[in-house]
Length: 120
Image 1 (cartoon, one colour):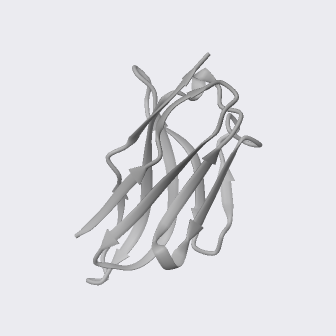
Image 2 (cartoon, rainbow, N blue to C red):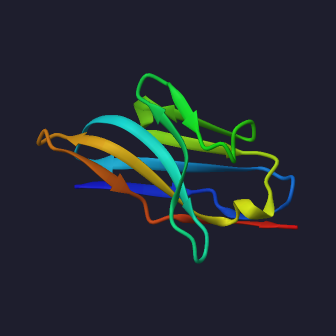
């Protein structure tokens, strides 16, 4: 069994910063890819940022230059540093990871989400 647990959300004023964390635990052999998605009320979940095991990153155009994703492989943890936050960044942020378990099964796993609210 694999679990992803996010932390670090909260309320921040526009222009401020937050850092989200997501820790994976359980029967993990390898974490191949880790990323962040977000879902605002009434909208579909959208991709925010992702990072491979080797450290290659990609970002949604809406967050390029403001958000930075990183990971600590030894701790099975991914981070999202969000700067210059805007009210439109308000959403529930979900961690996603493609994990190969110790049973040699590969699948996509999701965290429960953490709320980020940016006030104007």
